[in-house]
Length: 101
Image (cartoon, rainbow, N blue to C red; front, side):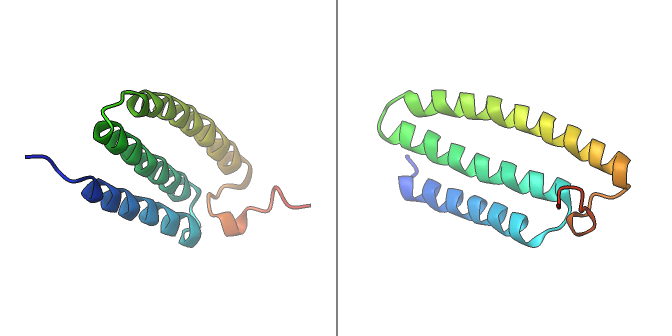
């Protein structure tokens, strides 16, 4: 039994929408970073689903590189969050005005 491509696309859409809502509505930097990861994983679901549908390995290879970049992004993001927390003692975006002119 095979699962139709549309199921994967709906799942990916729901995960991506959850990430977008998290980025737009939350003020905690860690939650925003996790929401961005959700959006990246939603695109990875699409790549793997279309790779399986078209019987081509290129989508799965692209997911491997995407996961590598996402891991680097998390490492840099957490380093920035730790630096901001040490400077301002908060991770709430509304209270951080470090980057404003």
